[in-house]
Image (cartoon, rainbow, N blue to C red; front, side):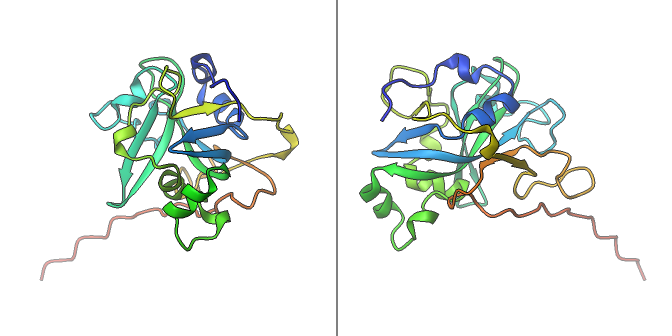
Length: 213
């Protein structure tokens, strides 16, 4: 494994620069090392309605408005945790969702956390990733660039061929037009079996009020 962690200056950039640069990097925590194969960018208040921070800071999103290089972990659907890396300037919320990866160390621990699940699917999706890595709400706000041994993100062990990086709509996020194509901010490595399946967002419409008799 790599000895050095990614510095804060790596994360203190535009989210659309940080997101593809994270592909191939190693997320290390809880005895497991994961090579990131899929991520999604969320630009916060910068015109991104798919972001939790779109309408401003709340107690839930406070970490996103803080310094870059911290984890933003949130609970969703009443059962899952998702982990994000805060990017950009302090006070301007943006983050990269860690969507999927390949376990490259700590296979026994990962298998114990994901019993009966094929290895390809251990971290194939953001909720699966947090279970495999042992991340939950207790890790919200953790500093990836601090002195603590974990969690941390290490540079990729080999340079990523830019021709392998693909981009497209984010999973489950709609946008103008309803198909999410206005925000092609999901990035993944072509040919990786751990990349999650694409699922378009569902546009919710209000049902008309029933007419009174």
